[in-house]
Image (cartoon, rainbow, N blue to C red; front, side):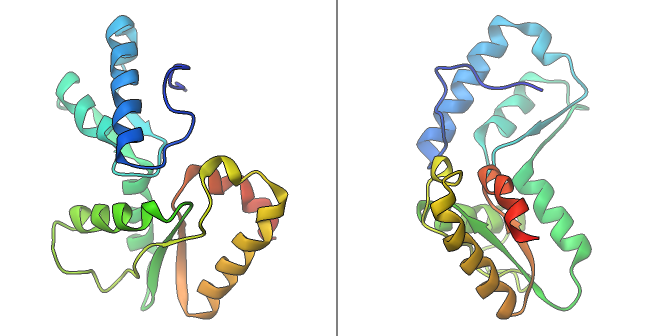
Length: 167
C-alpha cells in the first residue's frame, strides 16, 4: 500500500488535482526506485487518473496497471443483466469528467446503452465523512434504486466510507 506524499492534493476534485497528484507521485517514485519493482498496481482514485498512463511508460510492458474506475466498469459489465449501471460520484464537476472517461473506456463517441449518465451528490470527498450529509447520500441511492438502476458504482473512494449506512 502506498499513499501519496503530503504535498499531493488532499482530495481530487478535478483533472488539475489529478494531474498534480500524478506528478507528485511520479517524483516520489523517481526518488524511490523500489516503488517501481512490483508486478501490478491498482490506482485507488476513482477517475481516469493520469498516473495510470504515466506509469505505463516507466514500467515493464508486462506490468498490470488498473484504476478503480476501470475495475468498477469491468465488474458492472460482468454482473449486468438487462438493466443499467450508473456512477454515483461526489461533486458535480465529476459528472462530465466521468462521462468522458466512460466514452474513453468504451472507445466510442456514442453513449453505451448499459450505463446511465453519471450523477453527483454535490459534495466534495472530504465532506463525505460528515454525518449531516448521510441523508443526502441515502436519498440519492434510494432514488436511483427506485428508478430501476441495478448497479450503482460508488464513483469516489470517499463514498465507500458510507457503506455501513446502507444496511
